Length: 130
Image (cartoon, rainbow, N blue to C red):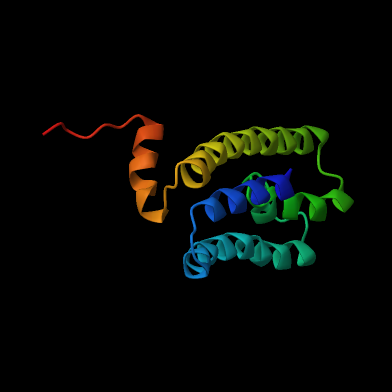
């Protein structure tokens, strides 16, 4: 689910880019997002039962990395199922959002600059009419 989730995010962002420079601009925040779990992985190697690792594994962006490291220490089944369920629900949310972004970017030709207006429309916020 983690690979699918990250793949959907990369595809949605890639649909907004017309040039390599735009893609590199959007890639920087994604790389930071992918590197954040690496800091928790160092802690998980030293102490897989750490409360920090337990809490961080409930964050859907970190779950694919940290849940695997917790498995040798037999976490409770309800935690594993809960984290997998949360990950599945979050992946469905990402799927819904990425289809909106992909439709706007690839089909309708929206770019990075159009994202603010698109996010407002998705959330249902409407500006004041002039």
